[in-house]
Image (cartoon, rainbow, N blue to C red):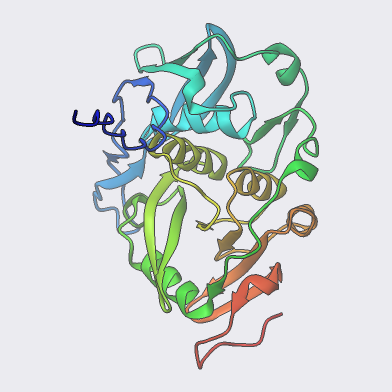
Length: 298
């Protein structure tokens, strides 16, 4: 009698990505044209950046009104909730619906979000372009954050990123009045790649939009670089660390509190980046000096 055939073993399935929430697609135009007059009294039609109030509702509870370009409102709402530690997973969000007739965005969750009132009772107004806000104690989560310590950034990769950001087509070049943030990764010993670039009227909203896009796309930040056009404040450092990103880069400077928190969480903070110059303020052990023109670290 022939031996019974064993049923074919099933291939192990890779863990499925979290189900994406239902999203509207309600981006507003980034710029608008207005009439201006130049120094000679001549008409000069000029592009200006958009700015819109967007009131965020979480399960029908009003949380905050954000001023934004409106270029990525769904990602902004998701990233804001992520960075405020009000929602722990993209899987907890069922829908994000933007309605510009009421200047609002309604986020509906699966019902697992708890203690929202308690978490939002205490609020700190930050230095984020006059509109930054962080709920709860700024230091509550600091000691729980852990960044990868086995990743490295070569100065040649940094110089490549700075050049690519400089050449990137931006709303700022067209209209000014905005801040830009980029998420990047290294692609070779002397190359970096911009994965996403977001501009908004304030740094906090630009950062939050990238955080939201990362969640939606399932991107891990542990080997990424975050680039910002403005100053590196405590809020910027905390949000970057919460996204698990070990490298924070800016063409501008930093604040004393931002510096202290970067040291505390072990973040590599690079400021005053321009051309082939930079200053490494914290986390210098993650940097590799490979380019012949590399300057000494400060």
